[in-house]
Image (cartoon, rainbow, N blue to C red; front, side, top):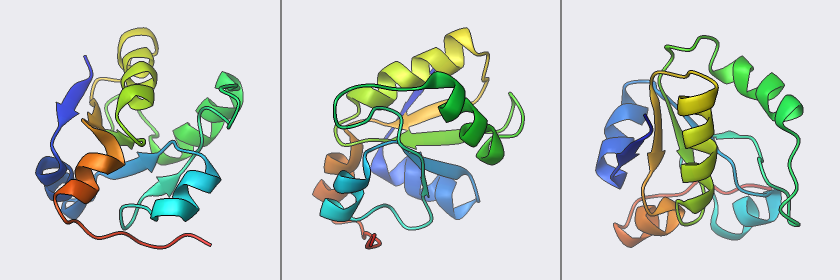
Length: 117
């Protein structure tokens, strides 16, 4: 089951070394910056298209086992909810979580960003 996390919970997990995966598009990363330490791995492109095989190949580099905890990040939390539910319910990842409210929630609490070129 996908866990909804607050920005504070995400910050605590990141400090413990849990991998954060930002699934937004490169344009979105450049626009806002990213949560420091995030791995950048687009799921849906600007047109809403995706390639699950390609995504999973890269994803497994960051999340090597079905038990490895991870947190997905997007703009509002809707993309991470659908991708996270797929990973938890269909792909069998036991410790799937996402930032509820996405990067907007992160920014609303005054958290810092890392710029992306």
